[in-house]
Length: 190
Image (cartoon, rainbow, N blue to C red):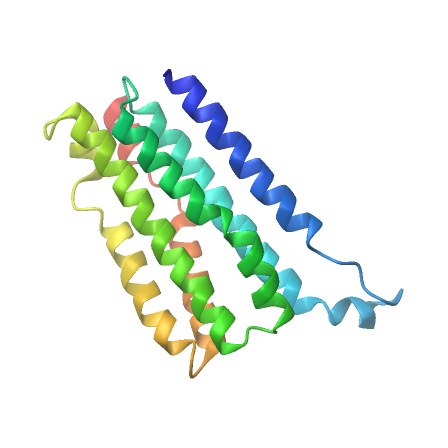
């Protein structure tokens, strides 16, 4: 399989996930700002999930660009990542509609952890297909941002059962960490 086909498939799946998420948003019952404010929790959950998907889409593009070829292991690792991302619309709606209640907020974090781990598996599959001395392996290095993200998610999940708002803040902190573009791979490959 070509890189272009893998990337096109992944782009399509992520686009469908975002489309499902936006279709899950319901308009307010009224026609004023107060009616819209009743949906503020759902809108916050949507915005957070949209940005998370955007970050994955962007980083996936850079990662796939670093591959010379696609192996069977990379295909399965990519599907693994897309599976966890595909659960975001369900958890986004549940978290927003529940006004960030403990269980939905914790499960949202579980899916974020599993998606992050799946991304690491994809990254490692690509590195394994290229060898430990590849430019990608050298660019990824010890992946401090990835490890910090997993650490923050690991704190946020149990925290969600006591202080769901604090867990949500930690999810947003991870987003802020990744909003700063990670230039390691692009710099090494150019």
